[in-house]
Image (cartoon, rainbow, N blue to C red; front, top):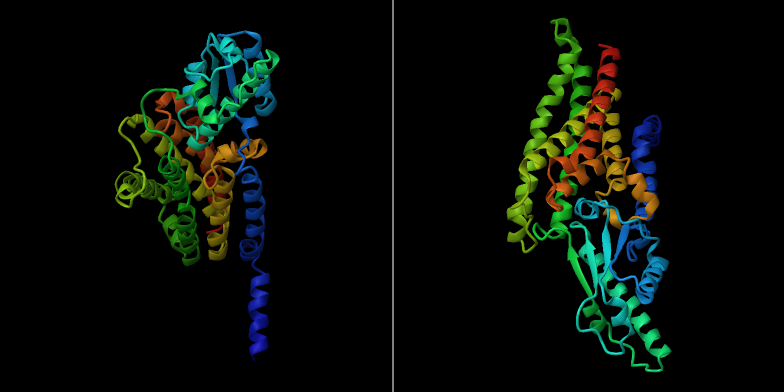
Length: 385
């Protein structure tokens, strides 16, 4: 009897492709995606960071510094007229300002006593990455200074990095607002992930009501399928609102109580934050409705939605910060709805943005929500009673 029972279970598993996908395909995809996303984790892909140079000093050593920097960090973009705004919004990651007198300072054999290089970074740039850029900039300047001294037959000893760091002044665009931290990055990321995870509950509910005949009985009473579909989604908008409030509260009050950094919302633009949360919620619930109308069994409901959520999170910068990804993965991340939501929240929470700064992400989320709700409506109307 035991072999027959084992055979029955194996046949049931083989005939359930969604469970097989969760068991075998998801781990493979997860390994591939996470391996590619973390390929440059210990040496972030600095060549993919968009930056520009403001050359107030155009002397030979200043030009040589720019050329040396471009060899290791890729070519600089043309300095746009509104570069301060682009820097605040994160479209430029940093700007190198070569102040007047830099070439003369690099010609001197003495160690620097004041800064002639400014490294202006966007508000959300990772702190460790900013420190790395500062050290590399100081090292590049130190090499040029040593070469200039050798050319003058007045070679000093190599300048210590700590001394050369005085030449470089680092700042973040905008003098106010919270600085990037693990909490400032992780709370928005996992808030987005939590909102999209309503798919498992919603899909299971639709499958249960379809199999029990509840949906058919409601339709026989004259309730339209569009109204039924809307009635499924609206309560989950409330669920997402509670999720958002809870996770923000955890970041603001619980994390500092546990010894971590606190989530700072003191200078947040609340209308922009609430609008971003609403757009994410509508997009998440609309996608959940589309998946709920597409699946037919509890096994499908339990597998398809969570698998899709995990993959979107891995690709979209939720599990791995986007800035540590290779350029190809960063471009792929821009196709993930979770990344649109995350970028909207980071624009508000980290970069001090207003509603206008989140318009590109809100537009994408709105179009995605409309598309998903349309798909859900078509599938729901075609589904058998």
